[in-house]
Length: 212
Image (cartoon, rainbow, N blue to C red; front, side, top):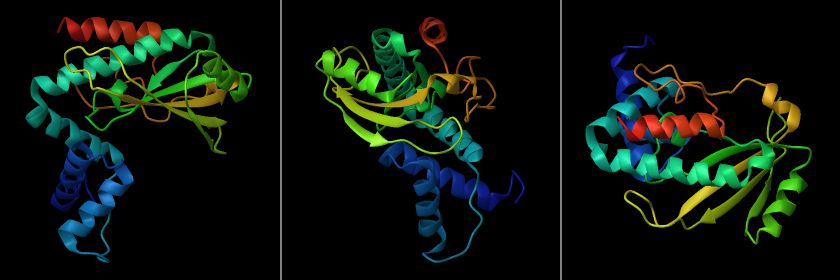
């Protein structure tokens, strides 16, 4: 399928709507979109994530309005506050909150780098923070453990009542592995396109976005 194949774009647009409105992840959204458009069991080539991301940006630009911009800024501020708190683990923001495609369903995703995931667990316990721990993945540079927690930030414009946070804890040397999901969409702030941003970079993005 070429990048401008009508079926591919139709599927990507339908998947983008499911991500924005119902909180589907990319893979599930593409499969559900294919079922809705062509029927269950129909074999069809699914669009890649870059095409879906492009359609999601188009959807948010069309329907998100000022609410999307305020929510995105609020989530980035939550991430910055949490990253400052976790500065001993070299935190980096990744995912939709970084690249600008966050919706009301999006979590804040941080990568942490530590000698041991237990160090992060003990830190959170000492802080009185409740969390759930899941196993990591075995891919090169993958997380050794994933910690999930929920915070209730101070209410400001665009700020949700609660924010779910995912902390992927990596070994210290994993910082040398290039980010998996750099974005090539046109018009992005340079930090949005990085795929992974440290606290200084995120603060610059917040400052530039607030003044835009």
